Structures are given as structure tokens and as C-alpha cells.
Image 1 (cartoon, rainbow, N blue to C red):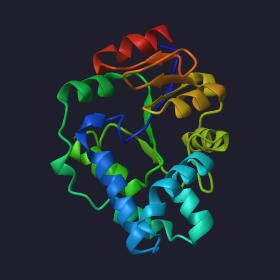
Image 2 (image 1 turned 180 degrees about the vertical axis):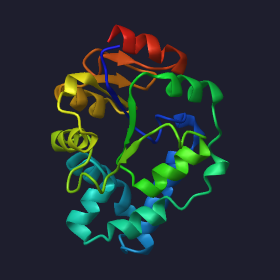
Image 3 (image 1 turned 120 degrees about the vertical axis):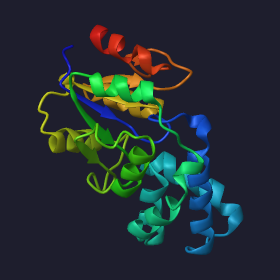
Length: 211
């Protein structure tokens, strides 16, 4: 395998989107916007979509337009009993542990949430670094600058020796444009979105060998 570092997204990538966790996080975002920022409920869906499209995450948009305390926001939206949504996958753990490359989490969430998720999945010892949304401020995935910063934090000079695994096509497209080998972890895929598609963790070693 030619790759030396593999960046893994966290939410809806290391665990199935069907778990419902991300939907629960979104509901917490709505609650915070209504209760803490006093945004009218009817405006919240529109603003969330607007900020997500313009700034990469709802968090960045709220920081820009509502003087958001991002640490308070992230702590609130991630205050969820993860055991209600997540369960370890031993096969996934064995596959990731056997990969002959450095393994790094690259997420638009924060480190505390990442560590809680990894612990719930029994994967906390498999990743040497978490690059979170605070590390790449004021940027976030899929902004090109976020990949530059992640590579720098990982001590990687050559993006061609790196992999990005993510569930969002816009992120895998951006990673590909940044020179990384990108893998889309989603049921739908085309070659414009990523170099490869991952729907079964058992196929990951073969994808990386062919990459």
C-alpha cells in the first residue's frame, strides 16, 4: 500500500448513519438556536441550510452572524447518551487496527465528542491524533484550507500519500482536489465524488491496495 496516513471522518462514517445519532445532534442544534440564541423556530431550518452551504457547518455560520460561543454550542449539541445509539463493531475494529498506516480522525466536531464516540465504539486506542474543528479554525471541511491544516498537523507533506474517508460527497471531492485519495462512505457514489466507495469495512484493505 502506498499510503502513509489515513484520515477518517467521525459522524456517520465510523458508525452507520442509520444509528440516529446525527439526527439527535441536529435536534440539539435546533434547541440551542431556539432557546439560547432566540432564533424564531420557523427560521431555524432555513438558517441551518444557509449556514451549512455558505460556511461548511452550522457552527461557523452562527459564529459569523450570531456571536456564538462555539465551545458552549458544541458541548450542548453533543450532550447525548451515546450508548443509546452506538455499539462496537469487532470486525470494523480488527480491519482498522490492521491497516499499515497512521490513522487520524479529521472531524468538524470537537475533540470531546470524538473521544466519546471512539470510546463508545471501542476504537479509542486505534487513532494517534484527532484533528477537530477547533484545530482548523476559522475553516472547516470541505474548505481547501482545512485540508492544508490537517496535513500540517499530521506532519504530512505529500497529500498523495494520504487518504480521506468521509460520508459527504462534498468533502471527498474537496479531498480529491487537495491531492488526497478519497473514499466515500455512502450508499450512492460516482467517480466525480471520490476515487472509491466504501459500503463494507471488509473491502477497505482491497480499496487501499488498489488506490
